[in-house]
Image 1: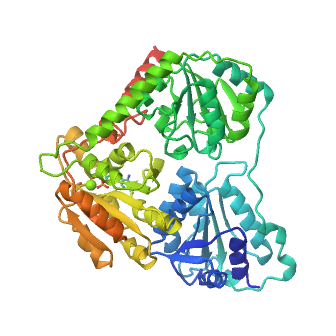
Image 2 (image 1 turned 90 degrees about the vertical axis):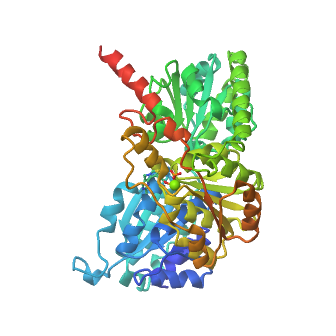
Length: 569
Ligand SMILES: Cc1ncc(C[n+]2csc(CCOP(=O)(O)OP(=O)(O)O)c2C)c(N)n1
Ligand SMILES: [Mg+2]
């Protein structure tokens, strides 16, 4: 067997059924063996899109996300996708090729230092130089990507092309490497569990916040929420662990819950900008319990008062078991008040969205578009959102659906590739991509990949002819000096048609429901929907676009600045 064949064999035995890729001489030996084993190649038009697709595939299906990119510019094109998966902590395997060994350190074609370039945004980055190392390195790369003993994330591995063509002696094929090891389980220490139980069951206003590290422990979280009758918040990385209608889930009470909670427990969650870095200005009344398996989940931003190291399911079960005989001190009146207020806010928002008036330019409000789209989708539809203002509107309007978006890397351009991967993963489900016009442009050419691979996606471009969240920033904070933020005169429907995808422009909101139905029936299809620029999104209003000094949102920034001033005085 050749090394290239062994790599394909490894992927096959690890359950990889598709590889997202763009061809190139340095990787064609592997490509050919993938075909031989029946592993599907989803060939795309830019390597960045290949990595985004592998990312969405992994996030939506839980099965391996693998992208393969050629040497040099193929690898550098993939860098944004790799960095995005690094920030989102998504396990991916990125395979590449390097010039043949006899040309090492010579000015070879497509030669750049891959491993040096990707090292800071990967969990593993190595070149394999010898046939006897191939399986061992692939095994280690996968373990690093999956986050065994560290955060999950992308692993990057590359091979000199001459090595790919080399025969592997039988003795080098260590069969045990084909088998994955199961996820690691860390039972917590009893003393830590007792300390956490005493704090949680003694709390009047308990708040639980879950993150990526809590995935797979939905049942155990729900058991804890029911036992405590507390408030629960999630963010995109843990969405869906607790169902929308669970009495503890109160997304509309986020800021208030953070402000009033007296005990906060994070489960597998980094205290990132979305949680005000856990600052005492944002959580002024809280004792902090942090649980998780990595330094990021246990130690970043704010030191916990009580730390319970362990995997989510084990920790949560241990907490509930230890508290079996205890009654929580929860102030049920507070929780009930929060619950009622949350439901009222959410219902009011849902009612108001479909009736928001058009802007001064006469075009519909993005909420009008999004609420109409939501009404026309099945409950199991996958929704992908991409954009500036549009992303912020979508996060609010599209709650309750299987959902992916630009995430904490703020990575514009993910919408088209994420949507294609979703539709290829779930051919029986509706997949809708809602994108700002600016964001759509990055990977618009992938409409070609979409059609070639028969991915049934409806792309909805919210066209305000601008990078509008930035344009709004210029209006508010830069004396209305608008320049370099407008995108006039693009016909995205015509662009879609030129690539063999149905495309139509919608201006009148009354025509939207029929256009959406047509788009769903004829998918892949694109609707170029004119929306008003005259709309400020929640993210814009909360100051996210303005990039405050210390905290991500201007309200939190002000609180943090005041707190630091008091501390210094
Ligand atoms: C790759 C990348 N480039 C630039 C930015 C900065 N940025 C954030 S939002 C935004 C505007 C997005 O415009 P559009 O997709 O049309 O959405 P709109 O705000 O108009 O709804 C820009 C340029 C970014 N986050 N990512
Ligand atoms: Mg726009």
